[in-house]
Image (cartoon, rainbow, N blue to C red):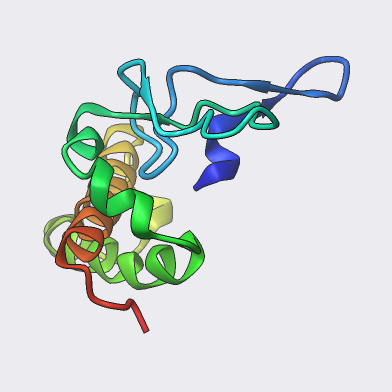
Length: 123
């Protein structure tokens, strides 16, 4: 989710968003895994949950495969919410829609950390 740590600035350039975790997109805590060489310009901030995996995260070369597999966690997390409110999203209240989005995001992030922690290849 490296794109999540960068936001478009009004001038069209990219600025680092210090409050976004490089791995899961949750709120960063000010600890990063970037700046490993003089040409680095992204501190790659981490949230408190992802800081527990710093050594494992450093081993990951391409996050895309991990992110794709982590979607399974979002789908699993969404199932109880959809069972409770139904599958017609247009009928959800704003609060229900926000709850669904939140559990999907949390489910993906949790699964992503599990996959990284296990050390198994995500493919």
